[in-house]
Length: 526
Image (cartoon, rainbow, N blue to C red; front, side):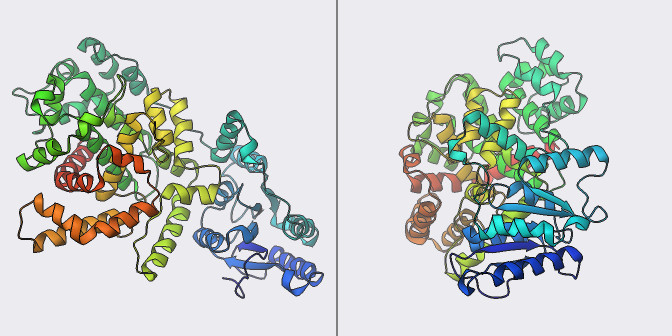
């Protein structure tokens, strides 16, 4: 809360703490009043009181550049260290530590590590016993009254310096997770390597081997005899299929320890994008399919109507993939930075979602659907970081193929002449958000809302699908769809691959199969 409305262009301190007559808060307020007494009324500094980390984020958005300092006290509900790391280049950060309430670490080593990390980000740290008037006086004068600029000019930094800054911002007690041995071994294999070599890479990893055999013995694959070994699996299902399953298992294993309650929604989104990317890139015309493509296409078990809309769209004719491009894996890993951010910046999703909900409410009040890319919200909070820049740091360390790295780094900035794999994943990401948006929910994200309106329109239509879908999109949602896409700032050259009405028709017709394949795969790889 703030005592009174803050006029635009004024200076503001966000006070993240529990309001209580503690010595450090008394010293802060007393010093601020002293500084204000020396200023004209219109120049005086205000402060906003926020009891939890989400309120810090929403207050920061409300007052934007007016915020000159964020004071994080021991009474703030939420992860104060994460708030400090995320906002370190957004405002001057001062953190008051009470070792009994908000210690920086559970042991001396972790305490020293986090302290050094925060100080490396120019966060000012002080124990409650040291946070007196003499401590606050120069900080308020220099950071707030004199308007000292925050941090380094990021635009002037070299790529190496920016990478180092990102690593500092993400540096937690546990650094980036390492890639499991099985994934490394499989990544080093060529698709043409003999099945025996694949078995050598996988056999010792019993959980992954078990999942592979479970999936291949499911009804989707329909092999006449039971698959008992990895040698058989590679021979029957193809090396690429085994690679896809291994990657899904291994990456899920790495991030299984995150405590975030929405992690299943993350995997649903990622798998939906992977399935859409794979299906949209496969030829739907039997005459254009090689034997591998024919097998992979048939595994989706599409209905005649679904095949017909794909054949009509002919999207595969415009998708020119490179030799090493893997649509499924690229789709699966495109948002890997989001879950990495959860591990390195614990509770960061709460701040992002607080801003999403604030924007949703504002949009509803204006009788609009919310339409804002989460990547822009991340940049608002962290200035120099978003899930793409986080993901590429991880992908580089894990030595992913160049095309996968490009997708992870650029799926929200799709240049006109970008490789087709990036454009494909950008389209598949839109499609995935129609079914399983993340982190925005189905009641917040505009695409599921528009899909629901298509469903309602179809119930009233006298025509058969997909002709009815054409009609509903044209008459019921098209204007709102265009408005949403414009406000999402999606590049127009994406629609050179497929016009948007045809695209949303195709996605709506395919949705039941993709949803079924996604949930089934998620259950089988658990």
